[in-house]
Image (tube, rainbow, N blue to C red; front, side, top):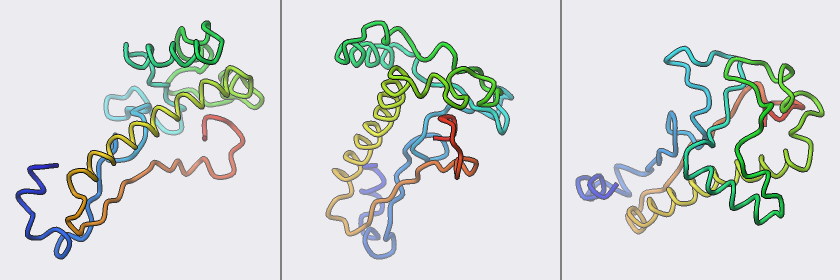
Length: 156
């Protein structure tokens, strides 16, 4: 970001009125939970939770301990299905599934909270670089078209 600012300093705020900050896959604030290019996923599959590297696992464990449920910190939902499955084919995402339990609410709040924290960090870094240049900052968020009117957690 700094090199972009330095290279285009004279254009920021007049010719370049807006900087769209990339937040994740396809520039959107979302997890890379449905990799289509390699055939792992295809529409309308649910994708998979992306919470299994050592950093996410450590964060989940700390959040579970803080919530008084250490057992919730051992990994993501065991019944969330696989990339190409439909929501109703899983224990987690089906209507009145595990997502609607105390554990499900905890996990989804933690998972979405981690994504929002990432977005906050990226935007803070962009503001530190582009603040005062006259250019407006913007970001894309994911919008799953099938989510409109849906009653399952897979669409949330």
